[in-house]
Image 1 (cartoon, rainbow, N blue to C red):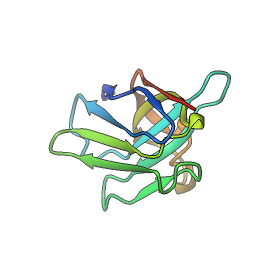
Image 2: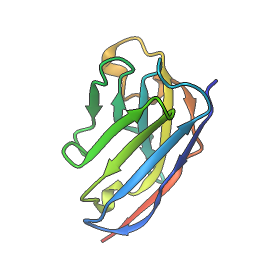
Image 3: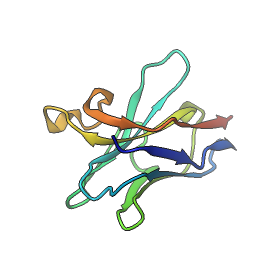
Image 4: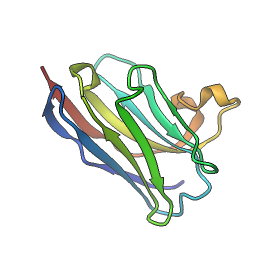
Length: 126
């Protein structure tokens, strides 16, 4: 499995911004990549996904217009730019790769991904 390492998490006030990065141990050129998050006592939820071909993106309704996912396959990285952060965005953010879900509608479902990073904490205060 490809190894993934997230970075860029931290603590910010509402309205602030953070930029998360995911570094892969091998080429990302043929992987769909995604970001997920999980708050305490909550289920892991999909945040954003980007295709390997065409770089088509998908976002959860809660982050639409505020977050942007991008990739740089020359550097084997995927980035999540988070703007106008809200307290509800607080959680552990995970990078995921190697989508193997049955349908396109599953691209923001955790079970569809084979490889995961250890996560980076994002905390947004009121």
